[in-house]
View 1 (cartoon, helix red, strand yellow):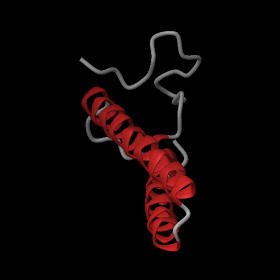
View 2: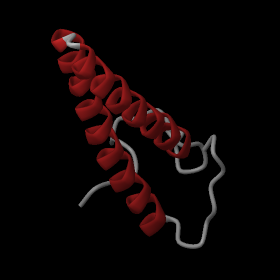
View 3: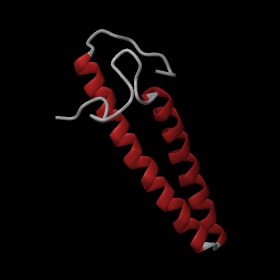
View 4: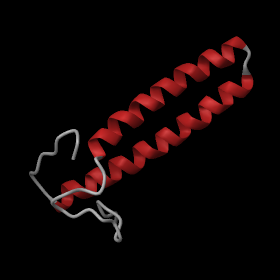
Amino acid sequence: MTRSQPRRARGTVGHAYSALNLRLVLASFGLVTMVVFGVLAFRAGVVWLGVFCALFAVVAAVDLVIIQRRRAARRREEPGTRHSLFE
């Protein structure tokens, strides 16, 4: 079972360890940006830059999965609670 926060986190239920909604927005932006730059780099023939961007796109995609799992765990622990972008 996935918890909403790591066990040794300094955050509490009242004050989250990480701003998950903000991380979701930033990871989404990073994924889109790296995919676009990666495609442009490959089309320009700069393969090393395209691979670099593809690697960061994969990291952003993995981060999105982790964020969504933590958000789901938070919804299970606190049903009916709405969170702003910064909490």
